[in-house]
Image (cartoon, rainbow, N blue to C red; front, side):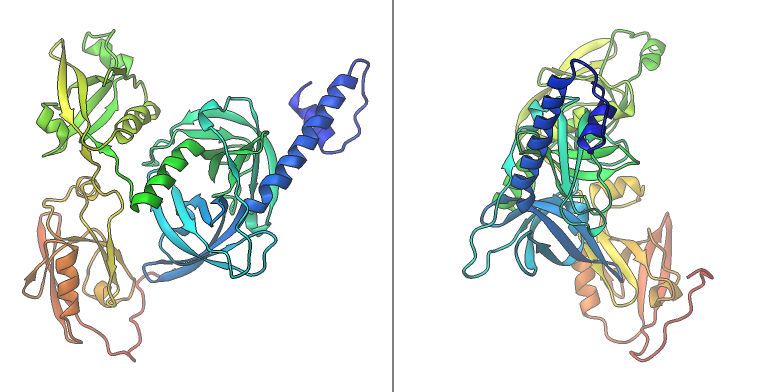
Length: 451
């Protein structure tokens, strides 16, 4: 029986039954009862999450979903639901009011966040969802999504696992997403994807058009949850190379049609890869004996996940192809550099962030010292001084700015008097005199006619 007919029956539509369909009808009724049972068991643990977010000088309320994994009040949701939150609250089905939530930690590379809420005096512990195994999930398997799309609490949708191991190019994430056609709409983010045993197999992360949704495997999420609860942070292995696919066209051009792997585009200075002797142009074929193949950008995620999941300090053998020879290099992995930079917002209309390895490379900065301007408010004092996003602040008054701590110290010493900022814009040094306004002075009009 095809899926369209199945959905018609489940929806209660009368379908003319043909001879021999009685067994199929019984099976459909059993499936329907199973879905109802799973929803009744899991829904009490699916929560509504509200986060008061501040990004630079703008505030907004973001809503999403989550689910309780520990009866004492541990909640899993998406990082993008609570990122930059000043306050997070959780609504638990069947309980009055809201619970103020502590953000235990977040992880940008998996889009996972761990929250904690506490029962009120006299209340029972919270209902917790049963956790399954995303590795055993099969393509074509029926799954259920529960969440709060558009604020509609406790919404249930049915679908199948459309694919596994999806690597969303350009997302800068380490996930091998589960793809599903169960509906994941705005507000569903953070809710559970559940198998027909009533076990959570993933955290719904994002929708991409009708019938295409992406879910974080629960095995990945639980590893992040354990690290954040125990350590407050994630420690991932780091080799220190940027890579690109090694397609067959390039292999044939280099007269190496049988060689597979990933192509090294750059080696980070001072990295384990540099210490091991990895060069630009090397083709990495194996990591600790695991073969690598990358014909297109979507294939690169496997290499990145393999390295990230290895322990910091682990010695790995890197098999490379160079000068028509296979070589084995030994590298000792270090901790992955910080991915999410710390920021500092000022009262003068600009925000800066520390210069991480990623920002240094992506902005093609000429030096690592300083702090990077990440936001300039239109019409602000900083905007009047012609400060731009992407400027590298290297000095304030007489204090050299080597990093965020120096910046904070310099700003703390400022009075309500004009002060001089020196910043690099490309190779040019720019001098910007910022003149603080009196508290009652109106903001300058924005140059943007649409603002």
